[in-house]
Amino acid sequence: MPEALRNKTPKPKYDVALIGGGIMSTTLATLLHELEPGLKVVIFERLGRFAQESSAAWNNAGTGHSAFCELNYTPEDDDGNISISKAEKIAEQFEISKQFWSYLVSKNIIDHPKEFINNCPHMSLVFGQNEVAFLQKRHQEMIKSVLFHGMEFSADHDQLREWIPLIMSKRKETEVLAATKMDLGTDVNFGTLTRKMGRFLSEDSNVEIFLYHEVKDIDLREDGKWAIDVKDRLHNHRQEVVADFVFIGAGGYALPLLESSDIPESEGYGGFPVSGEWLVSHNPDLIEKHHAKVYTQATVDAPPMSVPHLDLRIIDGKRALLFGPFAGFSTKFLKEGSYLDLPESINFKNIRSLFGAWWHNLPLTQYLVRQVAMTKMQRIQHLREFIKDARDEDWEMRVAGQRVQIIKKDEEEGGKLEFGTEVVVNENGTIASLLGASPGASTAAYAMIQVLEKCFPDKIKNEWREKLLEIIPSYGQKLSENPELTRKIREYAKEKLQLDH
Image (cartoon, rainbow, N blue to C red; front, side):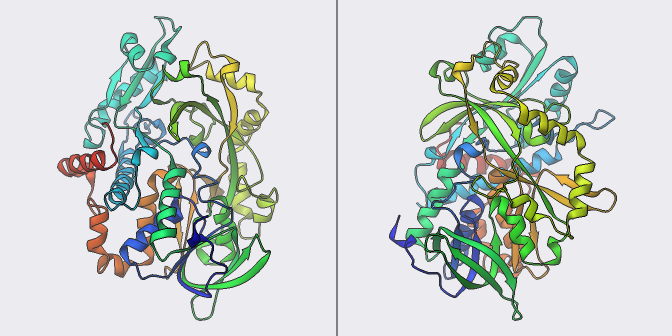
């Protein structure tokens, strides 16, 4: 452990306290350090290392979510019109992340970008006449936007065999299928990226980091500052720390901590924990035949985060294939959490939301029950929809990260299950929390700039603005409306991040 992490006890007072040592908190801490190095910032992480939960490499799919391959970001209405507005927003958000990482590389804050980001084509794959027609129409709509220039479409078996030989092996010539391909796609190791930023913060900034320190409670004082109850898990010692501003980036534990703050904005929120599992192969013969992330349509009643995909992963310089995710269920809010997390999160303020979301999502509950009950052989059968001759011995099961889907209060239904990422901020901007899952880590830089805009609006507009434009050259502009700027920042990211496309 670096010397900077060996602080015996936290100071009694900080300007900013960040809870959680994942991609969100480290991104926010790095942004704050660059914008105002004199701020007294502290990060509390309950485990012994950064990025051990959702940010860890095998706890997520590593997709640099740019909406190139995720079909649920381009819905089709009853009249057959396809909207790409959400896809454009997510693509722009990932470009913000790439600019942020490029800045960090250019300033030698982090190094060796290939250790955390590599090009990996993003593909959408569909089966059957109706889905092929949809994909072709989607492709025609998307390539009108500069953000999706270069996207290819094909329903030709010979072309598809070049793109995805592993998936096309043993398929009949009469089978109707099609794919789109975007070479600009990426595979990202968010765990390595998080730890690179954490290393900089611990060694070259005045940000203080405390591992094995768990925040148990957050209370608003009469003077408007926040009293944070922190437990040192190694020495079983508790102390109170005071902060002007608090950010809760604690993954699944963000919800109970947000509730403990008693801010009105937290009322009615609930959480639905969903775990996941992957089938993983390290067989070099299979890996040699698959060099992309291939997403398809979600099955009926399946949530968006359960869209089946067969991915190339590049982790610590080694390549592997990943297929899934298969949904699971646990009452834990974190992999290293407690089975009491879910029952202890239920209270009078959110019970109506929780019941309403459950009642109106009975098919989802049934889907999860079926998924949890699946054997490995049943999962291999699903894999054979992608790889016709998949063999059981080539694949092993691996548990993915724990996610907590947001349940929000809804006047009509009582509660609604949300599948996005949401920033919750109190009225005077002194506490913020990130809730939700996908697209999550890919949009960390965008999400944390949202936090800065909501909580430090005067600084963003004035003394921080010039520096923020240096960090994010496209800040304040819509890339979808500016082809020249889009090309310019993509070239910048290509050079700094050592990308191939």
